[in-house]
Image (cartoon, rainbow, N blue to C red; front, side, top):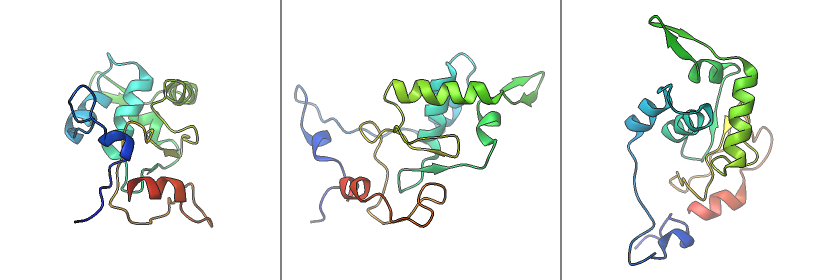
Length: 141
């Protein structure tokens, strides 16, 4: 039997219940576009819905401006860069994003979201010329 990719601390029952659940990517995508959620939550929903198997979400410059934007009269309007930076900072402060997350690579906190198949795939944005983050990869393999 293959070893579990779920962190050991997730496998401990709490009040007789498993600490592991699954989520709907479509629902997280939908919630990332709902203007009634604060920007930091919309950012986190976007990251969880789109995270890659290595736990990172590499992004193109400026893409979060549009991802956090809102529809005005049926036309998507981007937010300003200060809104993006504040959302990232608050999501980190609340423990939703890894402290090393930035506008070019979001990393949902491993204590909340574990993604991966155990493969060692470097991040296009974070690992340029570096080995993949061994601690993260050990935790999901």
